[in-house]
Length: 227
Image (tube, rainbow, N blue to C red):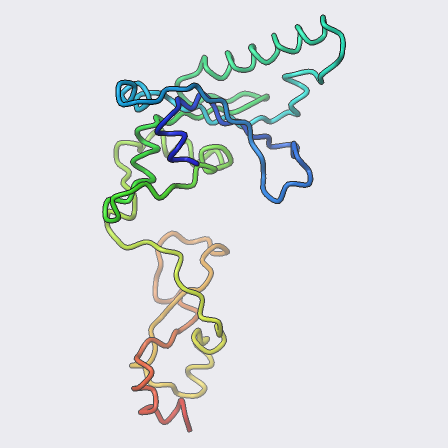
């Protein structure tokens, strides 16, 4: 869907709420996407240069737009409220935040490059949610260091790894490895869940787990593993 939007539309805004779910039965968080048709090669530069406004509402939607009613006068007022919200969002081409909402912009060209895999030669997608829900410090870093940041995939292979199906076997705690005196050639240091840690530099003292990494046919050489 991202690829289709970027290739055929100008994405005016992507709006999400911080305080409410618009479809309570939905399995995923829902958002409002405002698009303007802009297909074709002639409009590519216009699409690329267009700034997508990622908007995070801090108040309920009815604060910006009153509920629908059957009275014509009320509906006219409601349409005007929609226009005011869109104009407020479109008025900002840089980071903006107040008590009601937060707006962060990103060009469609940048979004395309972020999700394009040069090795596969195709667009594979990216996580846009960070431009809406990330903490304030993320936007501060993005604004002050935007010319100095490069994606990690330019320096290393990045993937989510493969599930082992038997973590208790493949990821051995340091204490257990020392208790059974498992030879070091069958182990390498690892950190299974960095999310709960408060350090930025990974040091040997932080390694709480070891993982088996040698080929299966060599394991039988270890007396500690198969005694």
